[in-house]
Length: 529
View 1 (cartoon, rainbow, N blue to C red):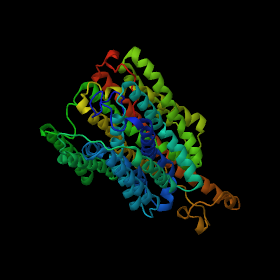
View 2 (view 1 turned 90 degrees about the horizontal axis):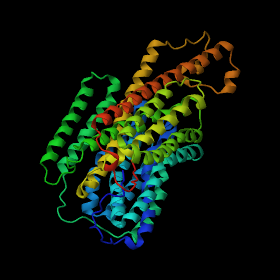
View 3 (view 1 turned 90 degrees about the vertical axis):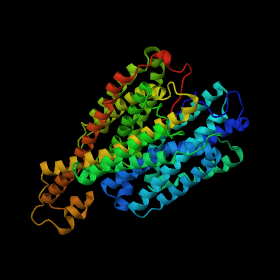
View 4 (view 1 turned 60 degrees about the horizontal axis):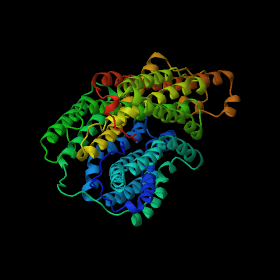
């Protein structure tokens, strides 16, 4: 999340060393941020193809998204501290280089484990790269008006990255292969590095630069254990291993709070989340991240696996939600000055929840235009209404010294929410499919069914089916409906719970938010979440 009023470490009125080249610096940083945002969605379109080629399980498929979001979110706070203390340019260059290497390894992965490890490594280096880029930007633009313009450009590019990622992912998957959804980062990094080395001058924070390593370890262990526990819940919520990991995660997070309360140089000053308005914004970011990154992943699966969309068509089919979000954010930026943040933060999640519930109407043979598009538009519009005021509140009243931590925390809450959501919704999806199988017996093969057409042998193409006896054709059609019916049952269950999580933001904001319209920054803020 980014706010143009966020304080730079450079003292007010002081021209930073990158000031003379500030617009060139903006171009380099925008390219880097675009790459990071792209990676959150570009892989979603590629997942069905990657799953088939690498023989990835359904739970492993979700971890391709979760591994990136979890490491990114868990290490963002530490990444911000490293950038400030070690040097912003150095952190930026190392983050970019590591991100490219991890992307290349993922692009040539031959097994599920290799791909998951590469995605986790991408998240690690993104957690170093993203706050370093933000710190460079805030130290480069010291004039208030120019900073607002810079963050507007930066925000517009990064804000459209999610939609661009869906489109680019579809094009690359269909025409050159899913691996290029990862390999495309390599040339982008080379371009950014070639420009950054001569253009950007090093800056770093001075004074007390001690790292809060116990806090960093505890937050990483806590979030990792919690997400892993949720992912294991597909085997049963009462399983000892599931309970153990969830409890361990909560204990680690409690210890993190205890350590931060006693640290002289905390990774996260507890005054940041303990504020009523900021707390509401952070809870909202966590829940929305769960639905956005976790639940909406199943829209792309439905379009490709059940409706048979090509990757390109699935990319275009997912874009209306992002477009509706952008339009609604423009509406919200005007409405918040007249209504204040609370009405929008209560109405937005309820609208989004309605959109998700509309998606539960899907069936095996539903029309995209009547059953998918309306839900995407309503969900995206509600998200835009909510996110604009919510992200403003995340920095409301934060001191200049803690603005970076507040910004990183808001970003981290969305990413961690996505990681938790991916794990949770995978469990819900798998459980719903199992219930479907229990309630709906599989079709029985007809007598004389050819052995090479058994359910485990794969489906023949349309020309082969047309040459088969009618009883066999009927069985194959019924089997297709059965398999896709199980998929739809899993998707709709995920949409229901995603809607419940989003709707839960409304009462949280209704109770906690006290800020009025006059409490928000006088100048418009541009945010990235």
